[in-house]
Length: 327
Ligand SMILES: [Zn+2]
Image (cartoon, rainbow, N blue to C red; front, side, top):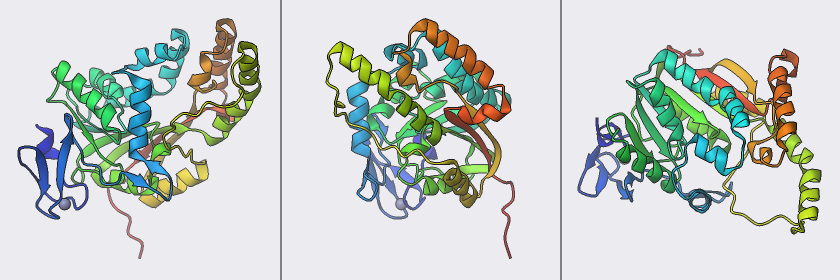
């Protein structure tokens, strides 16, 4: 199936018809053009109230990327040793892949798919599934589209640029939606969750991973002194370099829980994973020390009352099969 046959108008959910170089909506009359090789179905490009800006995502990724990177390439470009990356993967992405593997869903949405590396990995363990990836960054979804063409998997992989708040898909379409480290970058997480619930089939699942606010702050604080010393010894400037940073708002547990409940999801599992500092710090830790930290991390993950030390949340939400109507 071509992606054009699946997409609906993100604004009014009307039928789209394809002309030579655009998709036009029979409902509201809006037109959507391509940016390079992907359809641009974005409805919001910036939000002054929150400083959220799609262009900043594109600029930051284009500057730091330099091409398609799968998980291994990404880890080595950050100087993360392979043994540490294996642990990170086993804690988060392997769990997502196992879930997909067990269920063999028909349709999966990878929301905030970046360059699509996770979709490719999920596809390996569930070849019959059709994957749709959307991202706000046209730069990254174009990298995804290039890989789809290069690997000749146009029948089971589709990429487009869109906002999570206005999804260009019809109701009850997906079996599973995955948001791997995405919710903290959204302009409106509440609207996005309601849209995800709309496009999920009854009894469908939403898998979310996102950093823990408490542990992210802790490791940032803990890294202050070593970073200062490193810069001092290397003769680097002690003030922070100015870099383009895409929008990030790590939400506390209480807010996340309320957002899930308000959107009408059932919380089926809420786990804490990864008992190490953020991956960007790992390259600075000497290998013998990192190996000891890894042993400690594996042990900590097994002790229930220490679970709060996990750096990321791993959350499984379910869309109830029947709506509960309050009278
Ligand atoms: Zn429309």
